[in-house]
Image 1: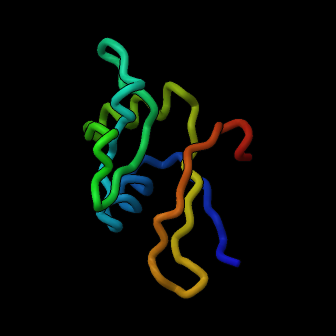
Image 2 (image 1 turned 30 degrees about the vertical axis):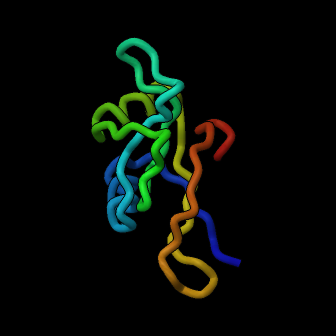
Length: 93
């Protein structure tokens, strides 16, 4: 079974996503006035229900919500994995 990793390091998260062609995004229907909605990383093919946002806006929301990034670097077969999810920082320790 492949190992999962948890981080809150912005540079590591951005590098992980970009290495896999991912961009920061938000779920369009959850956005409020001046506030990004539910965070996602969007990969090819792009999801039409997501809106791209900048990394600064993404990480502002990430920190404000107290999130951590749970991810897998490689699959059991040794390929780059895109498995990830956002979890509560306090429950990820």
